[in-house]
Amino acid sequence: MTLDDASLQRFGFIERPAKGLINIDPLQTGGILTEDARRALVEWGDGYSICDNCGGVLDLIKKPPVQDFVHDALPEFLGVDEARVTHGARESKFAVMHSVAQEGDTVVMDGLAHYSSVVAAQRARLEIKKVPHSERPDYYIDPESYGTTIEETISETGKAPALALLTYPDGNYGNLADAKRIASVCHEYDVPLLLNCAYSVGRMPVNAKELGVDFIAGSGHKSMASCGPIGVLGVNGDYAETVFRKSPTNKNKEIELLGCTARSATLMTMIGSFPEVVKRTRNWDNEVADARWFSEKLENLGLIQMGQRPHNHDLMFFEAPNLYEISTKVKKGRYFLYKELKARNIHGIKAGLTKYFKLSTFGVGRENLSFIADSFDEIIQKYE
Image 1 (tube, rainbow, N blue to C red):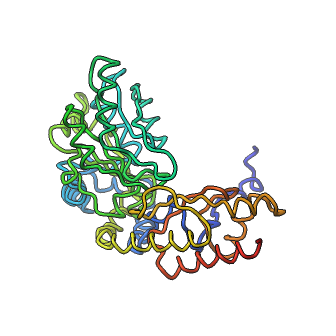
Image 2 (tube, helix red, strand yellow):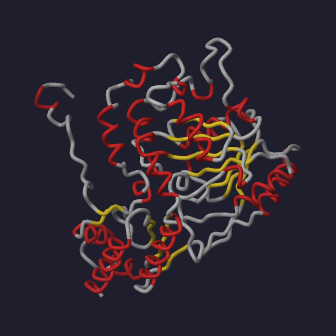
Image 3 (tube, helix red, strand yellow):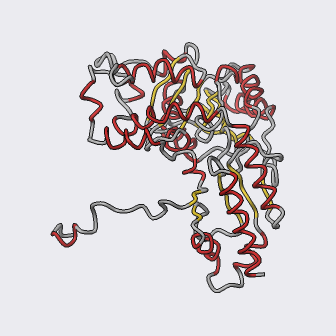
């Protein structure tokens, strides 16, 4: 490409296509900025503006109150002894894996684990062993299966796994496994447990100490109303000394975090949204009620909700045999649903999906959810 004035016109400000639509994409519903965060996005958007006030350690900046946020507010919110901000939940998971395990060790993780948990383990040069789950329609994970999988690892390798991981909830079906029981099972074998809470921290109450877990990873851009990429990492007990160990040559820099992590706009939007994020977790029972109400509405139209029933999370996975049947006959094919929803200002179900799709009801509200359910009804009746 020749960077002349004509070619450069392709860049510059680009309007977001989905702006202003009702968004039910699980990646988006928990990441919508609060008004204070939007102000922070502009105020702190210049490069490393946060570093104007840094004495050498990012999380010790006193003004703005980064130190208070990272070392006081976050540990209280997560239920941990030590917390840090990271570039995302996957970076949090990698930091734990890379610090507590050695190359060739095994990490046990649920069979519904997100791909980023897998590649984090691979990047840390670890072996992976999956904990099985039941099949359609509930995809249930039996806590005792963690014990069985740990014992299999010991039998095959001669030693216990270095780490266990549970996705809470899983990113496909929105299932919330019994984290407390799983932590107890893992600890019977002296195996620490890492909870991947990309879709829970910031949406619902999660307390690592109450659940008995050793590490917790969260996502700011998925669930804490933050400009991405940003995440949080919480650590309990003596593991903090290992995960947050400092460089012998650059003595104020933590190795696993490469010294500094999320800065400026990402960090300050997380801080800007934090008061509302804390408050909204207190409304979780209503969010679950909305999700169950919406699920019932869609099932009355012939769709089938997969996963836990009654459901306990806003993220849901549906099988839609009637919509799939329509897609095999209409001119627009498998893109018809996306186009029909878009015409009604509804965004979030990926283009081309009709037989299976997932969505989130978090923060959408009963009025909009009613409109969405009615829209599905209209679309089905239109083509039947």
